[in-house]
Every structure is written in C-alpha cells, then in structure tokens.
Amino acid sequence: MNLLKHVAIIMDGNGRWGIKKRKSRNHGHKQGLKTVELIIRESIKKRIRFLTLYAFSTENWKRPKKEISFLFKLLENFLVTKINDLSKKGIKLKFIGDTTIFSNKLKHIIFKSEKTTKNNKKLQINLALNYGSRNELMFAFKNVKKKKLKITENNINNNLFTNKIPEPDILIRTGNTYRLSNFLLWQIAYSEIFFVKKLWPEFNRKDFNRIIFKFKNIKRNFGRV
Ligand code: FPP
Image 1 (spheres, rainbow, N blue to C red):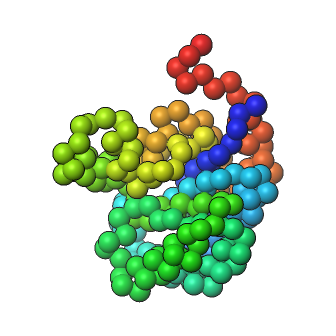
Image 2: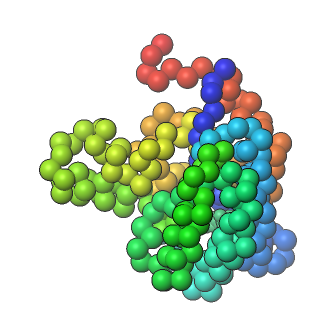
C-alpha cells in the first residue's frame, strides 16, 4: 500500500455553490472555509503530514474587488481567530506564493501565524496565496542564477516556495473542471490526480476518504514497469 504524506487541493466551486443556493458567491466562500476545516481535521486523523491548499492564485486578482476583499477578510479572520487552536492541534502553517505585495497588516498576520506554529510537527498546512506556478519557477530560476549555481533539478527544487516539502502524492480538484490552473506544475510530475464533480463546499469526509483509499491501492510506477 502506498504511503500518503502530502495532499494538495484546488478548492474549486465556491462561487457556483453560493449561486446554486440562491445566495452570493461570497456565501460560497464562507461555506468553503467550513470544508477547509473539515479536511484539516480529517487529514490529522489520517496522519497526513502535508496539506497544500490553493486559496488565492496570481490570476484571482481579475475577480471583482468586492469578492477579493471578502476573501482576504475571511482569510485574515480565520488566521487571527483560529491560529491558537490550530497550533494546539500540532499544525504548522506555511505560506507559499508572493506575499511581498500584501498589506502590512496581512504580512504581520502571516509572519505571526508562521512564527506561532513553527515547531509543530503533526500536520503542515501550506497555504498558497498570490501563488502561481510559473511565477514560482521564474523566482527559482532567477535565484539559481543569482547564486551562480548550476541548473539542476535539486537546485531548482531548493529555490521553490515548496523547498523542503515532499512532492504531493495526491492532487485533488473539485468543481467539475479538468485543468491545473497554474498550481504546483513542477511538483506534481508524479502525483496521482483526482478530479471531483462536486463543488468544494459539498466535498465531504466520505469523498476525501474514498480518494485516499483509491490512492493507497494504486500501483505507482514512477516510470518503471
Ligand atoms: C475557488 O472557487 C476558490 C477560491 C478562489 C478561494 C478558495 C477559498 C476558500 C475555500 C475559503 C478561504 C480559505 C482559507 C484557507 C482561509 P471559485 O470561486 O473559483 O468557484 P467557481 O468556479 O464556482 O467560481
């Protein structure tokens, strides 16, 4: 059976869920956060070591201003109110993406969340914020060049936002959309990919466990026969 260390998720379908419920897209994001909390609890139960969540992409800035500010308020509020709880559960938080452009307030919240949880060992949550894989790769190549290193897989790995994090074993995308949307393109070279029809707020423990069960029984070849 395959060992499961790292799950990465594209949490798609919040907006559509909100509209389906005759409410707003933002209502969908609020409900999406509840699914995030559920999947965190389940990941701990399943002894998963890394959970990487695509919360805001470099392309999401094209959304209406009102939706963007709602998403960031939701995120800030989540971090401020839940960080101690998360820490008590043994969760370490890490942010991946270009966070340099954020407000001082958000930068401070990010800094504090990482600092408070830095020694925790149970589950590491990598929150992708203003993240884009091409952007990450460009950063990495520039850094490798600046440090006058050779272009090798190792040197590139060591200069990604995800350095020291093992590659995802599983990538899940909800929302009945079959694309990767600039997420971890380098890191998912050998990940098992699961596309799910359900919208993210509808995704539940059973769906998650079904994927884990399937993954554990897949024959992973990594290029061998
Ligand atoms: C994609 O659904 C989802 C997002 C861009 C945001 C994800 C955010 C959350 C789940 C809540 C906040 C999370 C944390 C970790 C605090 P979409 O809006 O693109 O859905 P659509 O395809 O139906 O429009």
